[in-house]
Image 1 (cartoon, rainbow, N blue to C red):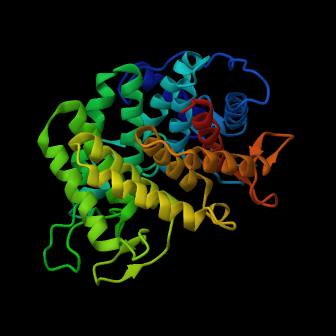
Image 2 (cartoon, rainbow, N blue to C red):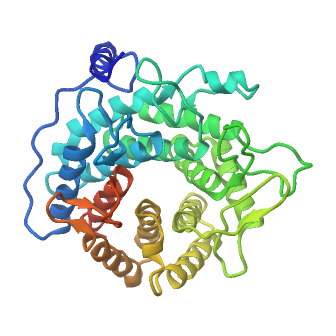
Amino acid sequence: MNRRGIGRWAIFLLSLGLLGLSKAPPRPRPMPAVSPASDAERAVRAYRAMQQYFFIPASYLYRERYPPSDGDGYTTLWPFSQALVATLDLSELPAGGARFTTDVRDRLSGLSLFWDPRSLPSALRGLPVVPGYTSTVVAPFGFAGDLYYDDNCWVALALLQHYYLSEDQSALNRAEQIFQLLVSGWDTNPAHPFPGGVFWTQAIGNHDRNVVSTAPAAELGVHLYTLTHDPAYLRWATRMYSWVNRSLRASDGLYWDHIDLAGRITPDLWSYNQGTMLGAAVLLHQATGDPAYLEQAQQIADAALTYFGSGDGFSTQPAAFNAIFFRNLLRLAAVRPDARYRAALQTYSRLLWQQVDPSTGLLRPQPSEPATLLDQAALVQVSALLAQGP
């Protein structure tokens, strides 16, 4: 079936409400006008470019890069999840945010095309059959790919962002379902070095336990505890946060990337790992009232800003990683204000916009390479976070 035919199938199935959290909505309305040179204007400009060059309206999906190459299909889940977050961020703009409600519904319709209720690849490999979002779109639009636990973390956190804005109960229900998937990915073998942690993926040949699959799961657990008052969520969140601190925290207070089943640690330092641990600490402080968590959050923030904020530190990180870091840094700023936090985000935003192609509005860190949906979604997020104010 060609893409045009696939698109028709998508519209038909979505109209029946079989594959998503909501039925297929009407097409998005024009973008709201905002004052020139503001962070909100930049966010909307970046979003318009994202929609113009990456969005495929007939399928509610995106392409992964522009210009596309022969054989490029739909984007994978990780970039799509960040486009979803970018759209949600625009819907939170103080002025005109409500105009993006239709766009949010479009993202949810597209998201539904990654949902695999059977978890077929997992079943074939003898893994727990727990439904989740796969890395690629499912039939009839594609073939369900490997399941990544970190991808599902980003989706669940985005669904809760949507829930906080809309009180859409189906979004909360799906986030709870995803948390059960993450729990099923917890390492339960006490014979392993540093036992515990959420595996990164169900893909064959990878048995790493990562910060990026465990710390966001802790954030999700605290959110769910706050919303449902089920203490099991808080117990899991505390367990996940503690495992990362025990297993992957370096002496300078930053977090290494992952550990394999032989106990070998990969000491790469990524900004989003610092951000999700920082965010988990803030949320645990808010949920428990324990000031130690808030102190830990500040220590992580200080260590991360010292490391990434000097020289070209942030510029060596993917923009999507930095967007996640700064989102969590602003969460800390809301609880313990510090002028350095917003100033660091403003500095980074200026750096990103220096890399935007003025003819297209696309972020091009490497002008000789294609622009990517992931980078463009990060540009929207960074600008929208600044536009939302303290």
